[in-house]
Length: 359
Image 1: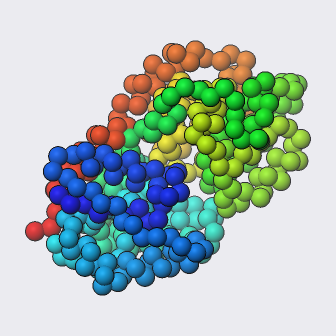
Image 2: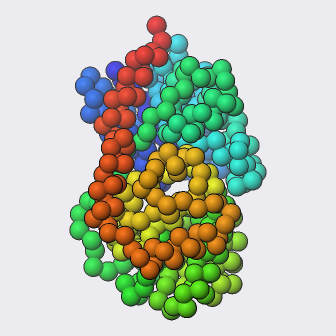
Image 3: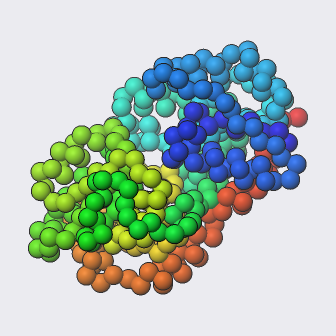
């Protein structure tokens, strides 16, 4: 089986969908009688201009001719053309439906683009994959006609946090002196959907209640839509809140090993890979009480309402004053990680290609 894996220009980003495409491609290539070729469209110019060129390319005769040489084309970033060769099966991964259910957390133009591309994918794809059962159920509720073509396949666990030794010092200057602090950690894009206002407010409450000057909050990730408001809120608290921007894997590894706990306050997620990264190294995990987080983390994490900073503060205070045994947490995490295997995901997806293949 020849497979063209189209990551929608995300592979070079190195996070999120780019990582999904990379790991999935490598795992599919390891399956018997399977060849995987990555789409090599070059993203040049501004982000918007590159996206427009990419969409034009997807509709071109040259692209359709290219597809005719493959058994499957898998769109890992949901955008796909209206027409494809009859003999080529089209598969698409829909990671979430944020643009439908939480459109106010995205820029207006991007939300409209996202909705249009998802609708096109759901209408035209032979096979639709979601990364959790919660998103599958949401997609089917919104697009009932797609139920028989829609399957949930969990991504595997990203091993970047557990591989290799812990570096002795942080590379990022924003983390200077962190070794002498007790700190809480968030990793992800600093954007509205991540609900960081609840986390910042909870941490500010914690510093006032505990009356300690050795506490810090690390928000690790690039700025996204709505980040300015979070920077302003953090500045008003006067607490030690550090925005790091993009971090190296070496710094991420050290943060996961040394944090007091990871806080994942999102109001909505498709999967949430930081959860499995926490499980792999026994890092305590505090999560917003939303369906996907319950599905992925189960009894590994402790939950709080998305709009209740005081409830989160109490969870943080408990972990600060009575930290759990990380070896015991790692044992629990090992059990929870079992369903999240790239090898299993590739085998399942490879079988679904065959089951939905065109005659």
